[in-house]
Length: 530
Image 1 (tube, rainbow, N blue to C red):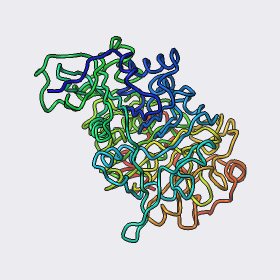
Image 2 (image 1 turned 90 degrees about the horizontal axis):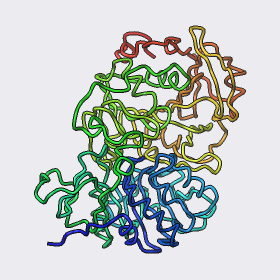
Image 3 (image 1 turned 45 degrees about the vertical axis):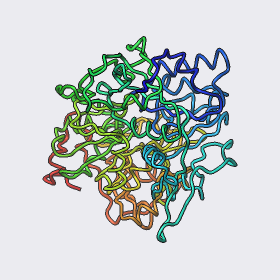
Image 4 (image 1 turned 180 degrees about the vertical axis):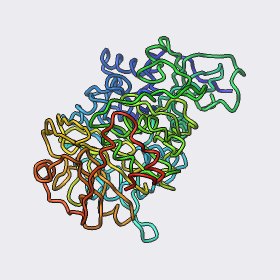
């Protein structure tokens, strides 16, 4: 029976040929194959090879310094097709400076492209992306000037009289994955990884194109030592295995720690992160956002303000039994980690594959999603993917907001150094932000307001001083904070004059309390209901 080779990281790097397509699997630094990525970087810097690679990655795969940041060298990567770069400044810099071709596609569609590619289908067909910058009639997902006149990797097709996006296949020459253990036959398990991810579908896609599969593991065990149901990837599908020589640094469960079994499902611990986070502008925005919740709903939180504050708020308010919190990586329940550790959760109830999670988000549609936002315009379009030349990318934003029943954007009213204080008298703007976020026209359409209205979504844009609700006529100002001046703090800080509700509410001052503000009663509709 064919078995994979057991090789060093340097030997694995030498298997990657010039001008080929490299695919890596991971999210943030979770399941990053650091030993191999460092070896590829070192080989390129020392010898100039491999070079002219196309990098295909579904998720953001960095913690600002590691992960795919090791590949961010001019000449090593000449084209990137990625889901997100918000935590990878080196790639954002290369994109901004036109040092490579850069395409951004919705993360969930990319994850499910592996299935389409493995099955030899004529591309991945989906309505996700229509009317956004991914639509080839708008930008085609091209993120810089260098890419503008390059080939389209997406198209629009008509099936049974309806338009769909067609995400074209990307043949994979080399796939890099990570597991926890490998036995002597190369069978791979992933039990200590904090996410399930889309490892097996990616392997199947690579094999369809006769690509090489290289896996980094923490340890080798004897043949037969791994339970058959524990095996994520059969050894017959693996070409090479690299045993990490420095697991504390190069095989970390996530950026901030080496290994904690409560994040990979081996144990349940008292929920971490339940200590109340400080009262600040982000927490106030998160508190006002979750006041839209109802009992027994399933919710999703995106990067930025939502992921950093909403989980802790739900824990502080003791409503974790009233709603089910999910993360796009496949997490159900627990308390999500934040920042560079986005996508994992302490003591979750379930961990499912990343690609399967997006089937739920795309198909059934989540009840509520809470997302960060960079800009909103007078038509209700939202930009969360590119500001100036800085291209963070969509991640799962487009997938999730396209089908969610209720979309709640969480953003400061202005951006760049805004400071505010809160007390029982309401809000006091200490320092206004340097730039406006309520603009006449967004730079890039990540969320299409008119299409959202047509599909019957409820959309709210929640800030520290005002709340807008999207209608068929555009965003309507429905609420302002006590202490905020309509002319000075609202209208003067916008590029368009908003529609006004017949009765503009005042934000309840309860959300400015240092302690729990009574969210449970709000969700149950007993007090302060909106």
